[in-house]
Image (cartoon, rainbow, N blue to C red; front, side):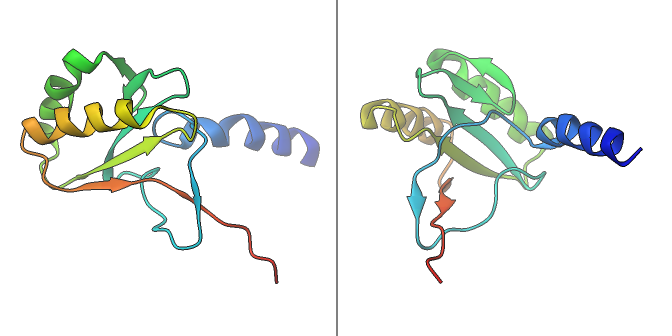
Length: 117
């Protein structure tokens, strides 16, 4: 019985996180945010694919998708998750598209560096 519950937990848990999984940059100091319901998550995968939450969008349609999300959730911040393997130019183009629709602040996602203690 415990094994069955463990398997169910292992299958369901990844589906509970919001958005798309990417390999985030590792930093010493980071804010644990983004994979909950406080933010609108924009993700860029290692292949350069862009997602708003778990919905794929093109760069041309990103502004409209984020505007629509903000219309429904005006109090939510934008949380950008960029895979460590993406080109900086791709991240910059995404940020510029967000700025064009009035996003003034973008929280950048990182992973916490493992402690050596």
